[in-house]
Image (tube, rainbow, N blue to C red; front, top):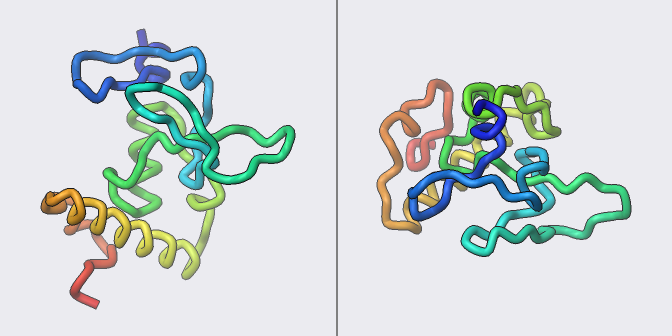
Length: 133
């Protein structure tokens, strides 16, 4: 059952989970080179791929906050691995800038959808807070 849960996708109608032969084997990266179109469950490249490139999708998206720590905690708890993609391996100021950019993008995504970002999201320790400099 655990293998099914870590490889399944939640249907947008919230009526269960399914495994899809085309997408379940794809690995994760926070800097993915492909996306999955829900409903159709098709995979499409988001940039040019060279022969031999691994097709990577983002399991997380922007809804789980922008910080590396939160993304790694989510992949650990939900998929039983800790993300070590190029973005999650950034250190120092580069990592902080990346996290701040992701926080801004996540905040804007919520606002564009007419939603108020969750208080837990805004209260993330050390996180960039839009409007507060």
